[in-house]
Length: 296
Image 1 (cartoon, rainbow, N blue to C red):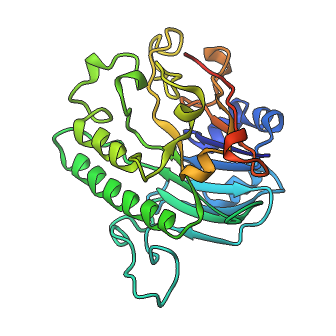
Image 2: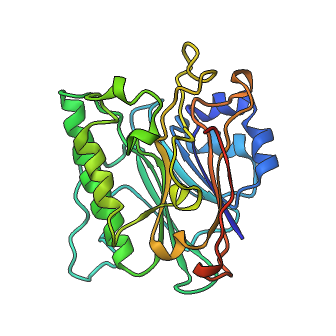
């Protein structure tokens, strides 16, 4: 069984100060994907402790972004950003992925190749933090360029025949079931038609699978982000924007999916909740069954 968790920590130092360490010891993930680390490598290592291996890219803009894929065993290879051939095969005639220059050093996309049981025996785990955007501004156009680069890279990895798992904060609510107040957010960044269409394309018939929805079924929710302000958490007025998106063969091996919502506002150590999935890599797709808990 392989337990993979993704969470936007909203600053690793603050998250650990608020109780992330105890949560990590209790949940014991095999692979941990982090977004908005907002700290240098040495701080991340000191806060999480020994026993983790992987890749972390700190943004060149200090105190911003930062993503990591960390595992209990050392990855076969790691990469940061989009500046790699589509299947990471130098000399195969492919150009590097689009967006390699614009998003280099932004701390928004890292990959780790892990050896796993079964066929094909290789799993590439991605941690991604998509820009928030702002409707009608240059920030939104930047977000669309990032989405184009991310989609191209994810498809290139999947086309290579490996298992691929894209984890992270996409800053997009895909459907009306993915945010509590969808009517009030029509026309706003995070719920724009073009953003949702991008996810439609990524999750097409031959594309990736929304693992939580595949295991648990239709919503509404469970949500993964709530504003720190007001009563959003208490009233469960949230957004489901944190995901694990897998190639079909891997998604079929998911046996449990959970949004690990804090029991109370005071117990939160981030404004996001971790998304936890257990994958039975020794099983067959037909044997996979689902169980879930969450905030719905």
